[in-house]
Image (tube, rainbow, N blue to C red; front, side):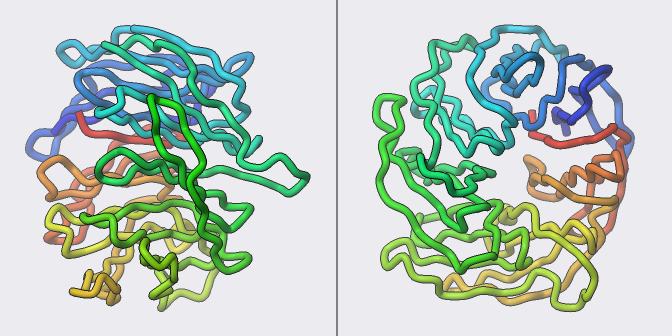
Amino acid sequence: MKFIISSYKTNGESIGIFEVENNNYTKLSSADIAAPSFIVSANNYAYTYEKNNGMSLIAYRIENGNLVFSDKLAFPGVSATHLVYSEKNNTILGCSYADGAFFSAGVENGKFTKLYTYQKQIEDDRLSRCHCVFLNNEETILGVVNIALDAIYFYDIKGKELVYKEEILLPKGVGPRHAIYNQDNSLIYVMTEYSNEVIVINTNTKEIIQSISTVPNFQGETFGATLLFSKDNKFLYASNRGEDSIAKFEVLANGKLEYVNSFSSGGQHPRHMILSSDGKYILSCNKDGNNVAIIDLEKEEVVLSIPFENVSGVDNL
């Protein structure tokens, strides 16, 4: 198992490549850039942010476990939070939290071609905070989750440009933070930060068909974070910062969820998580715990903890 980690660190080691075998880890390489708040990898390249006298996209080539700088593209963001890579469109897409903006940038062989779209979600005086971007399975539509506006905005991807399509409004105050499509794009699952729920939306009718708590047995302060499906799509997992747990739901035939149980995230403040390439583990980025916990999904327990200060993102290699 190989993966790449990013963090909020503004100096010192902030990106690392790790390999795990037999529940032991080896650090293969690292990089030192300012606050790479999220990271994605594809086709032997890794893409992240740098916040240093403004925001930039950074590309690294990965050679035999080593990080080799490839390119840099400045953009007018303030505090970027999320990235996705569209292989079909050769495009990096992301969002900037503080100014409520989203963007698209072309990329070819690890080199950025240009910034195609950089746009604020709204132009009025309302508070706007874009937190997450996500693609439909055909990579023709980008969803942008706005936690402050309690809304998800959708854009058609046309020649790397983003063109407004529609929006879905959610109940006021829930604070949508993360979202993913199901296999056939018929449903969207939304993780809320403030109400600690998964909201299930029918994409045809735009109606909410279910809202279900991710912390049914917890009374303290906690905030929803991230969603992911199991490899067979039979289960949905949701991370909770405060309870510091991962909730497991069975996905029923109609797409609704049934709570199964919760287990430890292996550290404090599980900000982000991914499924390992083989589908056997969750890798949980525990920001305040300063670690990435590798959780065996069959045992539902931590089998390895990798220290990494202010960890914010992780992706498979």
